[in-house]
Image (cartoon, rainbow, N blue to C red):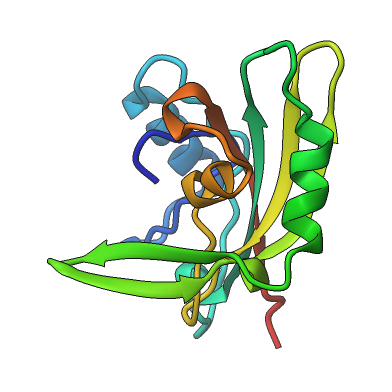
Amino acid sequence: PVGVMSRGDLLELILLEDLPVKEVAVSLERQAVPGLEIEAVARLRGKRKSLAARLREALYEIRVPDAAGRDYAAAAQAVLAAQRLPMRQDRRGQMREYDFRPLVLELSYHPDPNPLFQARLRHDPQATGRPGDLVTALGLDPAEAEITRVGLVLQPES
């Protein structure tokens, strides 16, 4: 998502010729921008669902300012206790309203050493929990938060 840092992203390639995995890894590393690390390369054969079609959840870390007087733990509890979290989204000039609460699968707050929320949001073809909306639901300004996607959860192959 725009404005979100990321670790542990997935890249899916369809090659025109069969190459050794090591050669693909070396080629990707050579092409990568500074700071981008290739952690693993695997070969998948046969007909499979794409990674995008198998995506079900995204894991986030959200760092927020260490502000005196802010009860971040209570904000997290309020989100989890809410029956509904109405949100509005502008899609191609049309305002759409939806309930954000079913998209928050897990949320925890860790105060030390710096304020940090950890979240697991739904991310599938039917609905996607956007981390900026979670920051808003917490009563915070998304511009003040440092959001990092730290993982993706895929539906297992059947």
